Length: 241
Image 1 (cartoon, one colour):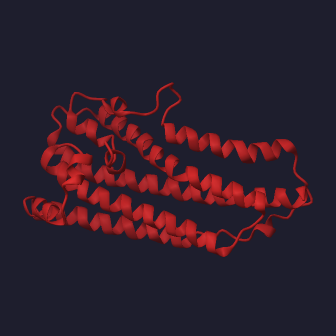
Image 2: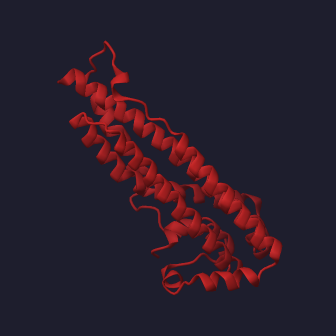
Image 3: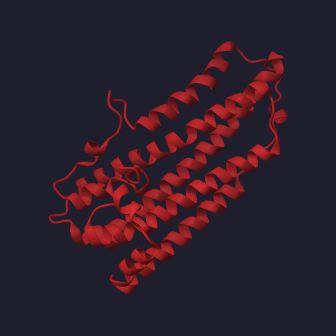
């Protein structure tokens, strides 16, 4: 019935908002990964450091990070819409969403960790060719060839951010869909906004830009310094490049 459907649809918006906030928190953590990469390695590699270029690099980096979560949230959106229409909200799906974000954050943290030592040696992020030939021993050798405090600091930072991410995921409380009961039946405009608006935001994030062409490598070319340009990217985006 429409009266039940609008409650279910409102709850889907509530769940999506909680997952969107979780995604933004992880984007912030990815920026902290980028900040530490800059301070521990890139700072010494960039000649004629320009503060505005550094800030622009970090701003562009946020766009690349949002792009990752735009793609990650797209399948979640369609699953939530199916649940909203079917009016089915089993607790198992809430566990699935947490497991999904837990797996995503583990992958992001591990890739960022491995990528750091490659960047420290070569001044650029790893690409698919490097990942294809990667072994744990290779990263261990790269760690041992760096100053001990540099490897130790980034390792500690990785563990801290990984734990913080899992704490946020665990703390998410989705509630119950029937709690969305309201005497307001819900208009067609409200229904349309709750269905269309999240999709538009997710697609915009996945594109990374409002320009005709989606976010690409050329958007990271903000400086004459390759080391600074590479800071704009992230390990996940570079994984299949």
